[in-house]
Image 1 (spheres, protein in one colour):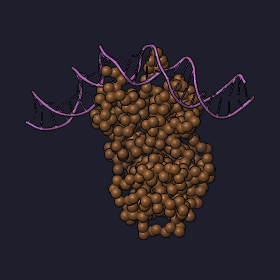
Image 2 (cartoon, chains in turn cyan, blue, brown, yellow; image 1 turned 60 degrees about the vertical axis):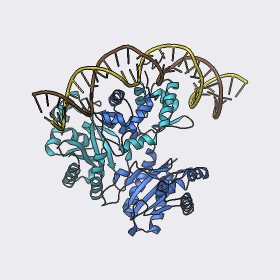
Image 3 (cartoon, rainbow over the protein chains, first blue to last red; image 1 turned 180 degrees about the vertical axis):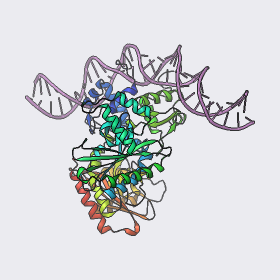
Image 4 (cartoon, rainbow over the protein chains, first blue to last red; image 1 turned 30 degrees about the vertical axis):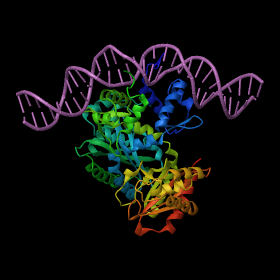
Length: 245
Length: 245
DNA sequence: ACACGTTCTACCATTGAATGGAAGGCACCT
DNA sequence: AGGTGCCTTCCATTCAATGGTAGAACGTGT
């Protein structure tokens, strides 16, 4: 036998290895990684050593495996969201200063909002973990803000396939939320993620008026002041969008 | 001929493709990417399509290639510096609040300081580009702070191979800077990177008193107040280190 | 309008790079 | 002392990867 009894290419395997790390886990043992990637140990070992040699992975002395610093560096230097994050950062800092709330920036990926940047509320323990985190469209204000400004076709497709695994939300409810968000120009969601918090997000449109991101804040229910928040967010979103092609 | 006339493995090629993006460039044409990665066009095309299929790259309609959002997500979720950044973030925010200066966090990689986190001075235009940026040890306060707390052997090896391409700095000068930094417990460097700025950095030690990072600020020369800065940085560095294993 | 250059995409016979079972080595248990 | 779990290396087998070639789809200048 040669070149994979299981019928997958080298590229497939490289991807499986990188994907094998569970969220938030930085270190894995060689054997465990081989298991997770469903690779024969010897194959996994060879592959990981190659990747490690190039710095994409970091194979420690005792068989501990991490993602490589070099990979982190390359990806962050050339990240597809680099321009967006650079444009958004000053405005996000402004909002954090003025409103003193958690600020976040998300893009749409599939049927989920992917958070690409985040600033924590001053004084609170930073919750940086949520960077690179995902939330389904229907339970995040950012997701709703993003989806409500997509094309009719995409929204229709989204609603067609929509199914809430928890079974608590129907497609009709989501349709209503999207319509409301589209009409108002912002999306809000209270107590869904966390019972004591309120999320508000507005779309960020690039120069061609295409919605490329959502800018949002998460505030304690008690401090909710929609009148103050929405204009601030919308102003910032326009400022960001003006810098994007 | 089969399996690479040039004698490199698939893994080599995957790495070359990812590394082919110049710093700060997010989009490349297929042909240009093939050139940069030194791959035959047809091979590059096949490889990139595979990677794109898995979301590590993103092959657009007109042959435009970007890094994939999925890759960014995976790397940032499981980044080797995740714990460090999470521990450091609140302290960095404190410093930014109290001192109103650019704050940065770096680790040592090879003979360079790799900046893993950064907060911009309030009011200044954010210079986020420097995240994932590198600076040689001898011309960055962070680099000096890091190197000055490494083992004797590593420092000796560093000094042995040291060579300033600009020819302005001798190994003896660097040796002196390192000794000074080691003795004082902080490193400073004035007007090297930018003629009007002063950089100060202190080491961050983990629970085993191993130096794992450097915490630093960059201040305008005019606002230089060493007496205020160093204690603040050292306090923060201790706070960060206490949370690291 | 036409010819030309450039770039993307697809095909397919050839072959050496990738494969993984087996065995060795090491550390740490019981 | 024997057992267990892990990392690491070896090597004959073979099919996945390769890249020259050619066609399609642009864009551009004459």
